[in-house]
Length: 164
Length: 340
Image (cartoon, rainbow over all chains, first blue to last red; front, side, top):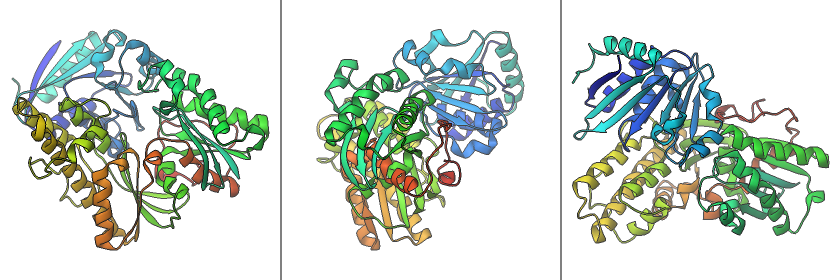
C-alpha cells in the first residue's frame, strides 16, 4: 500500500494512531512527519513512543530547541525536529545519519527540510488542518518495506478510525 | 577554587571564570561577542563545527575579561549533558584537555542543574527550594534539596513555554527574537481581551502542555488575520502572555502547597519575561515565599552557572575521570548519585 488517508477528530485520536503505528514499527525504521504548526506531530510521536518505548513515554516532548530527544527503551526512539534548521549541510553535520543505521526508530518532525537526505525506504506522514480539532492525516509509503508496513497498519487502523 | 566553566550543549558556546562557585569574574556567550558575526549571526550553533570555531576565542576572552590566565585555574566545570552529542563533545573534550595539561581536576555537570543554581552567583539562596525552569527546551518543576539532589515534580508533555512564545510570535508574524517581542507588545495590551485556553490548569498533576495554546493562537490568527495589528496585536500578545503566566503560576503554587517549601527559584530564558517576573513576585508575596530569579544575563544559556555545582563537586572530591562520556539524555533525578 502506497497511500492511506485518515481523519483525526482530536489530539487523543492522533495519539492513538501513533500508538497503533508504534506497535508494529520495526527497529531501524524512519517516520518522516510533515505539516504546519499545531498539526499534531509531537502528539503522534507521543503515541509511537508509548508503544515502542513505554518506559520513556513520560519523557516525550517537543524537540524543537534540543533538535533531538532520545527515549531509551526496548526499542529506543530518536525524536528529531528540524524546525530550526535551514539546510542539508547543517543537518548532515548533526551526525543524524548515524542514528538511521541504529537499533531504534527515528521520527523526524519538519522532515520537509531534509527531503534529499531521507533514505529511499521510509514512511511519510503529513498533517493537514481541516477545522478546529480535525486533521487530515496522510500516510505515504516509499519503498517495499514501508509499503508492507503501511498495509499492515491499514488493517489495524481500519476498525479504529474513520477512513476518508 | 578558581574555576573555568564551559558550556556547549545547545545554541551557545560559552565560557566563564568564577571564584568559589559564587563570584563571577567573567562570562562570555558567543552570540554576544563581535567575532560571532563573522560566522553568521543568530544561526543556532547546533553543529559541532560551529562550537569548534568558537570555543578557543570564547575561552580566551573569558580568561582576559577575568584578568587571569590558564596557569591560575584550579578546576574546570563543563556541561556533560543533556544535549547533542557532537556539540557536548566539543566542550567536554576541551575541558579534559585543559585539565590534563594543567594537572587540575574537572567535573561534568547537568545543564539544568546550572540553570537552577545560577541565582547563587547573585544572591544567597538556601536549600531546600522549589525550582521552576522555563526556557525554549524546558518547562520543569523540581524539588531541590541540595547540590546534586533534584526531584522532578512536573514537566511539559509537549511544547516548552519558550517554544510556545517563539512559535506564537511566528504565527503573529513577529520578528526574531519572538519571546522578547511578545513581552514588549504585551506591555500596552489588555490580557483579558482575547479568550485563550489554559491547558491542564485544573488537572491534578504538576505537568504542563502548551501545544493546545499554540494551536488556539493559530486558529485565532487565521480567523482574524486582517485585524491582528495595532492595539489588537498588543491585546493578543498580552492575552497570550497572561495565559502562559496563569498556567506557570497555578502549577508553581500547587507545587509549593504540595511540598510545603518556602523558597522558590525561577530560572531559564523565559524567566527574563517581565510578565512572568511580575506574576511570580505576586505569588511569592501572597504565599509568603522567598523568591529568587537571576538577572537576565544569567537566565539564558551561559557557562558561569555551571561553576556553582562544579565548585561544590570539586571541593567535595567528586571530580570526573578522564574517561567521562557526554550524554544526550540525563535524568535530573539521577544527577549526583554516582553517575558523575
